[in-house]
Image 1: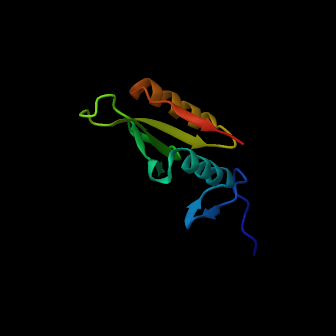
Image 2: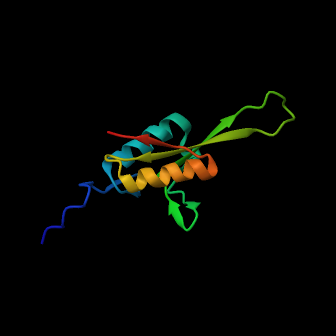
Image 3: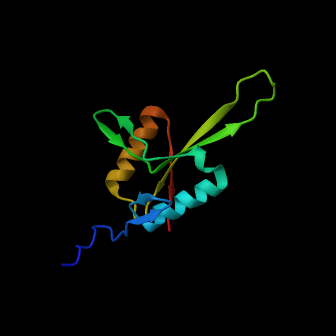
Length: 110
């Protein structure tokens, strides 16, 4: 019996032993690993928004070299979500996250 088609027609993919929900998510992961290094890309982060949560696909740590060598190194954090289709529910959660915490999620599309 064939598997039923998924709601958004995504095809689960396995890359480097990791399962991704879609080919797009796997491609974005590969691109981020090349650009920022595999150790700086964290998958499936959960951020609370009141009673709900939003789960961006990736959190990327971007390290900045300190100007003073005695100063601790610091980093910026970037949240990225890979989506073929942006839903109203996702947009509402992303807007709420920005309003509550000042965190913006970058959207990567096909």
